[in-house]
Length: 87
Image 1: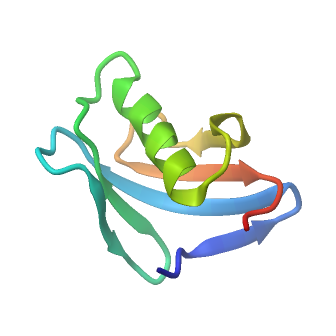
Image 2: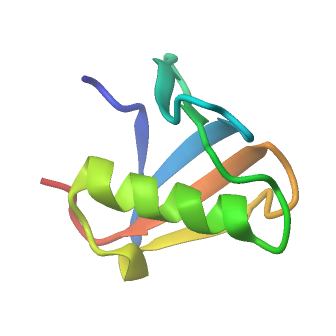
């Protein structure tokens, strides 16, 4: 699985598109420039954003503290910053 990262001075940038309220959460599609993820949570009270960070943490095998949504907190199109190296 080739995830479309963009190298950044602090780590990596990842564009993500989310679909909330899914019965089958997980990675839906990997595009050339973004990752499409289905989430079980609804976009209410930050639950979908929290689930997104948890799923990315497991998928990339990095701590949740290294993942930050830097654009699109209230949008389905998000920009994620990942601090440090990804192995």
